[in-house]
Length: 298
Image (cartoon, rainbow, N blue to C red; front, side, top):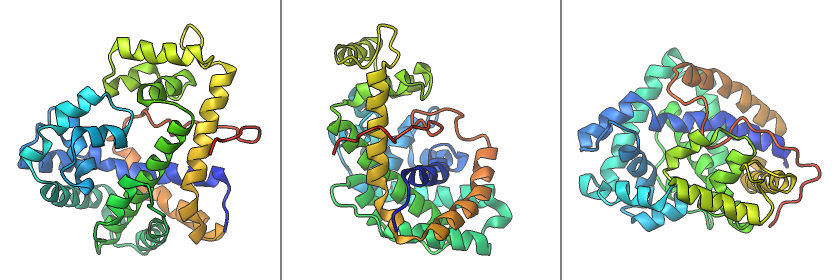
């Protein structure tokens, strides 16, 4: 079953908030603090929490796989990460955190037939994902599946978002867009204000140099706004990302995809309703693109 790219993108937008709870829930910070991580900001726990499925990897590997973060920032947080706790300890802590956070947020939905069905469908999609040359997705897919439906849903969401992320990096590289350029070009098309992208800690000089490189290619103007060519290129990147994310969804019929979308809405609204997640992020979840006359590089 082949689904439209708009449906593939819609399902990412539905599943991303489920995964993202890990980086904002107080339960996650409590578990991180118990391991010895600083919790006055989210980055000391973000990097080990996300990287733990890979094992005790170095900063260069994390920079390559997370892509959009300043490598100096990655080094600052990853260098001490595995001295503080082992990847196995971090994985156990994040499971405990997500179990507690989702039980709190979802309340009576925990164990409901609707949540069980959503978890079942999402797991089918996640298990259908080809993780060849997708290191983040492969690492998460190799983890044992939990028993509880809310944790199955979270793991499925995590596998699928990392599968998409791996594909997104491939799409950026195919279009010769480096880590800093990825953020500058996304800001240039209005995915989020430039201040939002400051969280990746590129210096003003590095941001300006990336903008200059894009300007030489005719992709941004002197104010840093995307030119027509820049809009087309970014749309091409997003189209290729959606194409690369589409494969796993073929395991479901159109009716099952629509059913899963409907089943996800109540828990996602519960999550969004907590106010934990930022209203704007570097992911550009609210962005829509016209693909009809856009070619994607492959």
